[in-house]
Image (tube, rainbow, N blue to C red; front, top):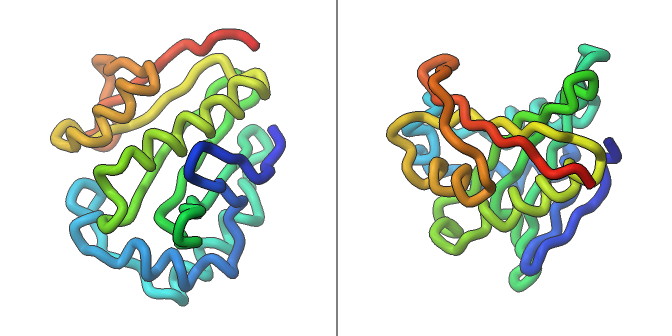
Length: 168
């Protein structure tokens, strides 16, 4: 799977890099973003360390990490990120998305996740998975819009959503 810049109608999905740390820290500073995941907003230094670690890729040769920041072209602002943990042997990818509070409700997470899903499908991924907290209705709507369906399985209190993807 190629980690490259992706584009959607309003967004550029840029491969995550350490230089995105300050903008991500500002965009994702609202403690409300941690309601379902726990923790608290990361500082710029914590984001820099995280970006460096993620950009280096997975230490497990059986998986590939794809991480993209979302740049809203109209105001050149970083608004969040999408992630894919890809297991090539299973042709499966686990997706995640986060959009900062000021940009929520505009469909940006759905738009970014669709662009990522199209990229993964073109790369031969046949199964998409997401884990969504049972009370996180906005993320559940995104998962449903992407064609994922809840399964009876939970991981760390989150429901596993899954979809079989069309072959390219």
